[in-house]
Length: 278
Ligand code: GDP
Image 1 (tube, rainbow, N blue to C red):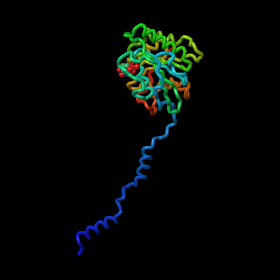
Image 2 (cartoon, rainbow, N blue to C red):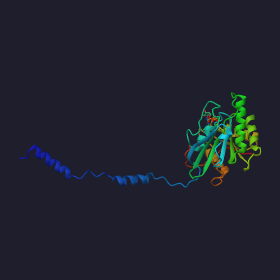
Image 3 (cartoon, rainbow, N blue to C red):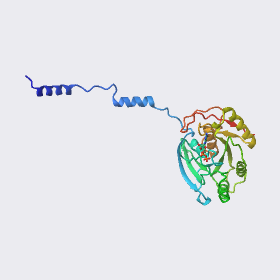
Image 4 (cartoon, helix red, strand yellow):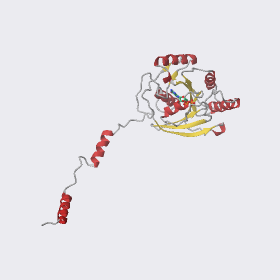
């Protein structure tokens, strides 16, 4: 007769002999199968995607400008035109450049170093917004000196993106800026390229967008590229133009049809509304 303790011991021994239930797949085969199913196709770097973007330097006076290093593309426009949002959208970062609904916040020239997936480096330079009515005369004079010093004396500056709010059109300050960009530089460098971008396109209906762009380009006698930071409309064509001007990567003329490329920025709607120049 077996005691209760003996029966328990026999049961335990039996259990020990039973091999553990085999899982359907061993851990290693599961992970490799997973890797196979989720493996992303390796894409050749195109330069379209910004993989790194960092604040590099800020200056409120010309003597604080960092030493020239990489090609620079500057961004200028009236306060509140959507400059910070556009720069964040271009780099695929949410908060690289501070955005604000309070006009007149950015008063320094700020350098942001970007590295694309093809390892090319471009410095994007945020210029303080102009046309903020509440600024004093001395503040406006200081702005003019700072901007003029940067735009006309920076040897590594290759181009300037001039931003206009699609709903406001061209104003006197914008014309003054574009005229200044045509003045001869005080240093030896290539002539500046100017890209005019109309921001906040999403605020207009598709039909109004076309006519507003055309009106702007006729007023300026220049090509105008439509952009929306909300939908990323125009993001890729603008980035490619910037790269071309900065002299990195293959030259890529913007195309009128929609482009599809995986990107850090939300680029699902980046078809390219553009009103041709002369
Ligand atoms: P900045 O002063 O030129 O740097 O302008 P911000 O980028 O700070 O934008 C000013 C305001 O406009 C903010 O409230 C933004 O959310 C808004 N904004 C900027 N870009 C767009 C855009 O493409 N579409 C819409 N609907 N609003 C925008």
